[in-house]
Length: 289
Image 1 (cartoon, helix red, strand yellow):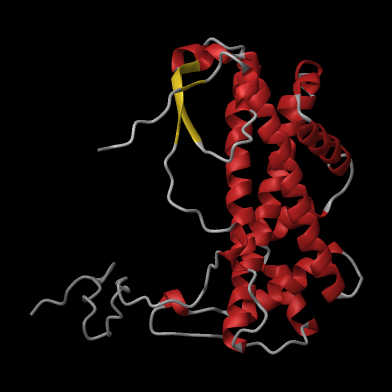
Image 2: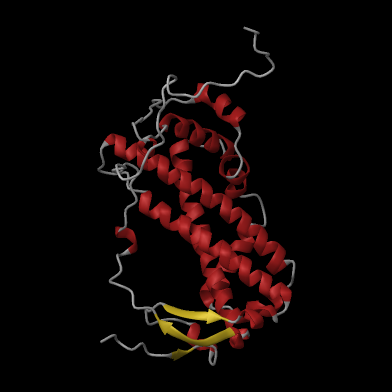
């Protein structure tokens, strides 16, 4: 017999959204009621939740792929390439999230309304973010040339200064190919753009800084979402129900490897020139026979 799920009313008391029992709850929002909320609040709710989801995803990918120690040398280097890709993408998303925060929360003066409603973690996160984004910051530098935009000229100019071995890991299936030399050059160019200090020292600091900003952003976003739902309890449709999840794996025990068995995934066929269709001649008339 299926176990009956206990109905938990959500929205009657905003304090119910301060989830301290470890459960995950599922609730449904009313689109009509959401559309009835003042546009500036609604827009921030939608955009901040979206940004927080993406930051959360990339934050997890970094934790799960950062398994360098005690690995085979090839595995370790492939993991480095995987992890640092997520680091650059996370920096770019944080930078864009900072723009949303400035434009839709601070400049829109919603802070006057929401600041008193935030919990302690969200308040601390907001204080940190305002200070961090008030001046120049590393995530902005990374975003400009190494996250969402490519700078081939910078990579080529960096190549003569690289001292690491320029290794490639190539496989019959592209899924196991890691062009590690290209990542070495890209990371060197990124660190050159960030400053003049020793690269090993700066790389560790940069990763820790990006993870710290991500955690503060997620803490602020969680507090804002709870405050928004507390201000608009009628936006809920019906009840929230606990999700019956299987036993969860501890966050730091999850691993995301680069090298995998790709036999179940078909690789594009490598056709030989003999198998390629004949290219039509353009601009030439056929000789009369």
